[in-house]
Image 1 (cartoon, rainbow, N blue to C red):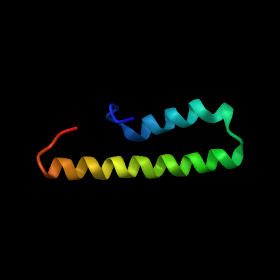
Image 2: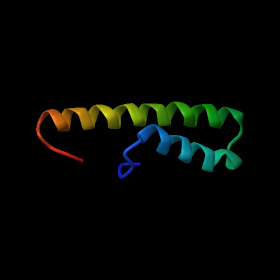
Image 3: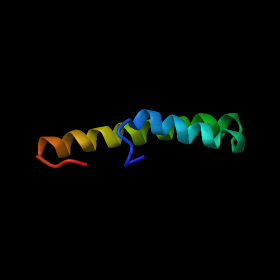
Image 4: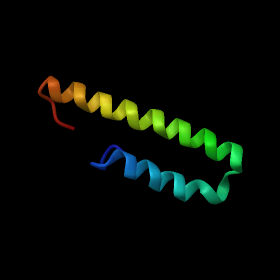
Length: 55
C-alpha cells in the first residue's frame, strides 16, 4: 500500500482480495483497520511533505 499513490484504492484491493477468507464480523473489522491505516498513511504523507520530504 505504501507504493500506491491512491491509498484508498489500495485498501479496497486488499479488502476485496481477503473477502473469500473472512466471515461478516471479520470483514467489518478489517474494513475498520484498513480505514485507520489509510488515514495514518495520509497524515504521515502530509507531515513529510510539510517537512520537505517526499514518499
